[in-house]
Length: 174
Image (cartoon, rainbow, N blue to C red; front, top):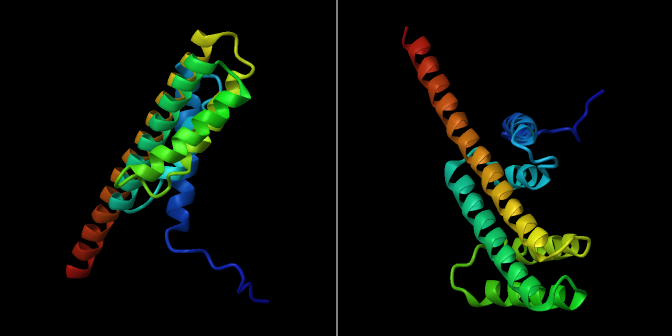
């Protein structure tokens, strides 16, 4: 019996190992640092993970720009309007306008408005502006950490691949 429908893509194992090991690093590392639920870091790791450094850098840049812009817009809306649905709609509009008007804004621009919705919906249950702004800054920190872990894993992956290629070349030359 053949399983023709099961045909793993190139680099499937690399993605799997990098995502699982990165999630373990982030989960236990950030929990040890006092962040109880490092979901944003793990999501960022998944979004940025690539075996190619050029693509990983582009994903890192896009994730950072989108998250920071979404957080800035959310924080401004929270200060002006408070944690309300109207604030969410205004911030959502602003995030989309920023993404559409700026030249060379990252192609996955939807992460900015998504960040607005996530932060402001979390603020609806917050205990004041200070806590809500702190939440926004914590999320940016988690995104930076998760994206950085993904980028470092790509550096290590490339180094290991080059090392294996060099080893294989030496073996074939012998």
